[in-house]
Length: 157
Image (cartoon, rainbow, N blue to C red; front, side):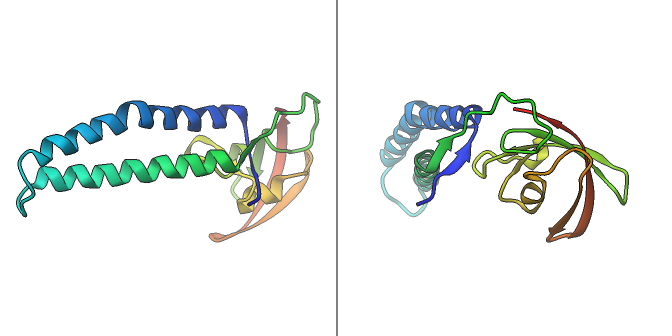
């Protein structure tokens, strides 16, 4: 499988979440399951079914995090002051049609969080911004329609 880029902070957050789930949440879920089993396996033992459901969710999340971490490759930022949008850089853009400005940090797919301004380099906006310079006009073909942006500023990594 192909390695996916990730920032050091993003990798550490995933690793911390995995550690928390394995060290604290998983033992709690196992204890809840054991306590629920003490009441017997009956159709009306909702504690048992809830504990099994929570265990399945936690185990699924642990496996997902392990997969993401194994596919991740930490990309160390280039310490070059550059006006080119690249992985890890924060790009300020202005929507040409509406005049709305936004800042996006270009990150890997495993740490993307649009609500906090972190977009994946695999997203339509991320792909369109990569390699562009200050002043460039960018056309983004997104599922919501065509958007036109102008790059205002690039903050290097």
